[in-house]
Image (spheres, rainbow, N blue to C red):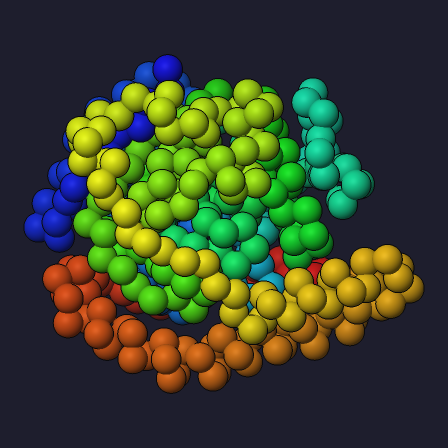
Length: 375
């Protein structure tokens, strides 16, 4: 039976609670010391915004746990998107001092070798959309720990452990996946099960995101953390906690039906929390779409059956205008207005006070990252 560990936590205890959480979920049976252990961080925005990306206490909790058990083969990674910069994001989200303190290297996936991979599983969408599969060579035979946060998403309703692989296994052209996003997430999980020795996830629900995720959300203080070696199960439980029916979310249902994990919450073992407590937990989240996601979906749908127009918009330099529109809306309009108000309110909370105790460190000196052709 799939098992998900869930703990209620507080800013005062969250780092040590992460250690207890990981042990409750039997992480050491999945994440072994003889393999390279990859920490797949979550960067949804270069800028800091609550619940958007991996918070520092989540990273510290995992690093402290691995250090206490003498894990030495550890590497932290994240990829670039058309709207994120891995080194700058690692700075603004306060990852770098923690990684330095634990002698763990941060490696943007833009600058590693990617190799062709032929999945043994039948792909639902990857071949159709991308014409094949590329993976980072360092992922072969490794273990991986995912670092999602609990939040809604305009493309997938909720986002979690399965979605966190999106940046790790698709080097570029990721926006094309939006037209079959649920199928892509299922394909990525199938690929992970083939290339990784062990897969584990820790999910932060201390500060969650409700509404127009994955960036322009309302912070919600859930005071919960989750962990599991079943990526479908942890996403299903998170969806249930957020107030959704897990098997009505396409990527969870598809993965469940394909036997990639357990999406039926009645068949999942819980540790760290009573089922009765879980059953009455409902954050009553609702998914909204930011203007950028809404118009992306409208334009893709309207042009899908007109290849000439569709390719001119999404497979040519014209796509740069969409990138510019997204950056302008998020970074230069929403963030300085509504975003800053939410951040200021966040700073007045106990979680905000904890975030401010972490150091940014010095702004990193980094080699120029490889610029992926976005179209």
